Image (cartoon, rainbow over all chains, first blue to last red; front, side, top):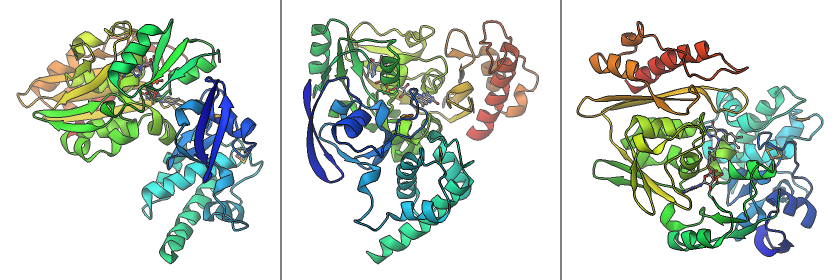
Length: 161
Length: 266
Ligand SMILES: Cc1cc2nc3c(=O)[nH]c(=O)nc-3n(C[C@H](O)[C@H](O)[C@H](O)COP(=O)(O)OP(=O)(O)OC[C@H]3O[C@@H](n4cnc5c(N)ncnc54)[C@H](O)[C@@H]3O)c2cc1C
Ligand code: FES
Ligand code: FES
């Protein structure tokens, strides 16, 4: 057992966990942040995507202890109060989800994509960049639309700040 | 996953000392091979020693006649490094094709080489450019490093610290990715040194892991062009054959990927 200290969604947290504990289990079971999902055991589906120090990673493939001292953001940490993050709003407006299981991972991966590409995103790039996130429902079409829509909104939001 | 004890050393020496104290210790870098294998209970290290936060293992530096990529540098950092893009753009491109963005944010070059998966990308670049693998004990030439499926010249507890890539006059990489895993069904790296020597390495194709392709090397040395490979035929002997592609299919892929790599190299 070790005490793992890290920052999650802006708050300092500390959890006593076994060394073999995965970050996704610390988030879901110790912190009750169950928005981060587990969809596979092969590190391929992306349902568990969170940001560590600003980069999208698969939290099922990181030990909680490896994340000690890091800044973690989950799907619960991106809205501002009642105001959805522009990526969340775009997924809602564009029907970018059906069952919703992949959605938290899709949104965290997509925010990272927009951060890396800024305004230079096109459809082909979004499809390519979402290779690590699997959706069994939507056929991806409306997910891609949502990301492109959000990229525009995030640029506007940034300009306003 | 079986129980284990996690360690976070802050230097290479401390990591090596921890390794020799552990009963069945393993190094952990990006964890994008080791953790999936531990989750499947195919590995059960008593101790995992995290190399991922050791500062002396991270970064890319220009060196006299090439670049040095330190072992715990992530695929993302190699793909986006200005130094790599300037000196050996084919290597940055190769790194940008590994897995998906989240995999590239964690996985490292040292972990990929130590693991020597027969379908991994980096081994092709290391072998084709005649790079040198540096460890905490010695330097190992690429031709001596890869020893077949998942095995290398590394001794127990030896740590890869960096890879030194010499500059090339021309270099290119092309991969036919497995559509689900993104690993190479076959990937080919072609390289021509400033003195005109040509080395070509294929990954994903052989039952023995990464290998050089002498027939393509000879044809490109005589005439560096995709067309020069039209008449070359690659034997299917010893090539992998599975539900994704027969040995004959992979033999043809070696040629086609080599042609695309030459075109990309210019
Ligand atoms: C979904 C998915 C898709 C992938 N797709 C690809 C792909 O397309 N192409 C590809 O090439 N790879 C692919 N990979 C593998 C990925 O690139 C791994 O990150 C890489 O192979 C291992 O690097 P790591 O840093 O994660 O190593 P780890 O998993 O931390 O370690 C792997 C092994 O190397 C040892 N090790 C690590 N660092 C060192 C060192 N410095 N010295 C000595 N030993 C060391 C460890 O002890 C362990 O045995 C994929 C992985 C996943 C999960
Ligand atoms: S649960 Fe992490 S990739 Fe599937
Ligand atoms: S919306 Fe159901 S898996 Fe994507």
